[in-house]
Image (tube, rainbow, N blue to C red; front, side, top):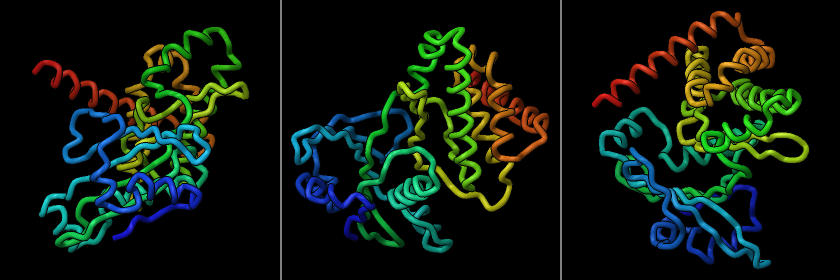
Length: 269
């Protein structure tokens, strides 16, 4: 299957120059910086720094997905569903169309395989800033006592979460590591990355939204949670029109407690 491109046709020549216009070319590419983390399995993530036509560097990210297991492909054949590369490609396009700040999907390709698509790849743009997991505590420390800056940050975070959910999507990995903060002179801007598990639930939306919000609460700096979580949740619910707040609070706290117990058991091993 040939590569599928988004509405960034100006990059077609750059894609072709580096072989990212075909599946074979994307898997043959040997440059870039490999980004490893636990439980990637057959997936690869590579940071690319390429020279554009004007000589300026362009930072993209290449994701390569090995073929799914036979069982997964058989289930997909029976029940339908796209391969991993196409699923994330489509999620990026849909969230971008819904106004959720995220990266852009530059190109995607999948090779045919038995019982559905085989290996595939995805090229995406970078987003400005740094992950909240790395810069959140520093940002809070620098703006301690600056109510205006902290309110702007909380509003941006509530906008991001409510925009995602109001569009009908849930992230399923809504951790601080997947939210990038760009502290611009006009105020903080937030971007959502890693959309591999995004989906559009038809049922149990409360459950899936609670899961996203619990992941956020679990992963944010404790000082922010202690001081700002209540205001954030109220702002989020005011934007989505959901409620009551105490129902969300009970469900989120119960989920966070389970996450902590699971992490404690893992740490004791």
